[in-house]
Image (tube, rainbow, N blue to C red; front, top):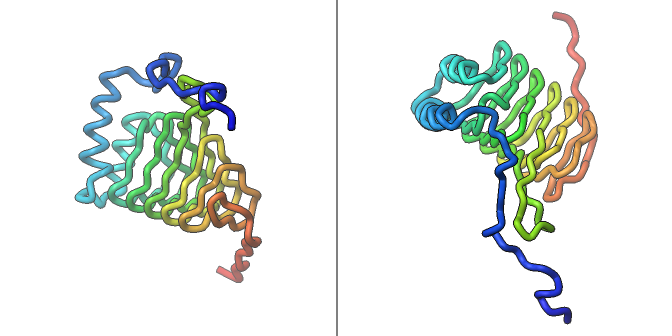
Length: 194
């Protein structure tokens, strides 16, 4: 067996994320922390309209007809864009160290975690890695699913409840498991008439 030291060791005292810019100054981030806790994370605010106005005030791009349920958590709203008629479910955590873009008519269910930050586990200093997340038009991310940094959930694909997505999905496919794999094609019924 190879001695542990010849494989390298982690030294968190060397961690340095001074290169990372959160996109706003310290005061804005502090104010956002309290506003987020009072108006978005709180289950006492059921109003989508109020949450949308607050997010826009802090730089988020929010389309029309968006529904934001109670108890959501947004790390940095200036890194968030949500398209028209999309839904964000209770307890969703949008950890937007990097941009999170959600297309129109997308459904983000309860307890979903969007993780835009990770660590380089090959680096002894455990360096920070940030990558954007994109959820395209008509996609559905099921309850308690996790979307990892750099992933695009493509048009009309589904991420099943509890799934962990580490790679881009394909359009109109359903993904399940950890790590998630494609399990079947999504077929949407055609509407007839008006």
